[in-house]
Length: 152
Image 1 (cartoon, helix red, strand yellow):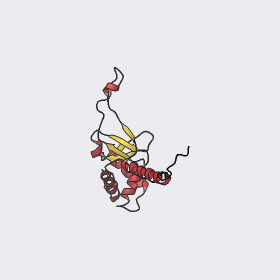
Image 2: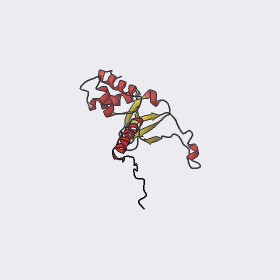
Image 3: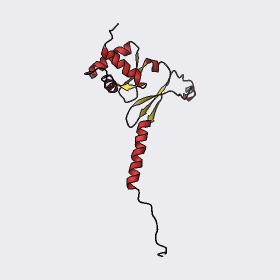
Image 4: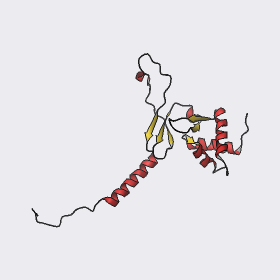
């Protein structure tokens, strides 16, 4: 049994309060608010311990560094959404259901994973605001015709 340290407690609290899978860097940033001078090596060492103690679950997405979420979140079936703008990952609590019908005849589906990709609400709102501002800068003034005669 490993001892509980301030660093480990801060790291676990950061993961549990986030309510979404966090990267090691995101955990470092959040836990550093409670424990100053926390280093990334300490974060990784404690993450390894928390995973072994089954308090934290590793979330792996294709081509990405691992992320970590609370085992309370991991203990129920869910999927993930990754923002293509900010790269944050969020839990998706809906599931398309039984995917066994998609497997070729004679195959047995034992489990499935699903990751959605797109823009999160924050990035989508920022994109909308940026697009609106850009449109306001480039859109010409409304055309009003003062002439009453036909030039043709």
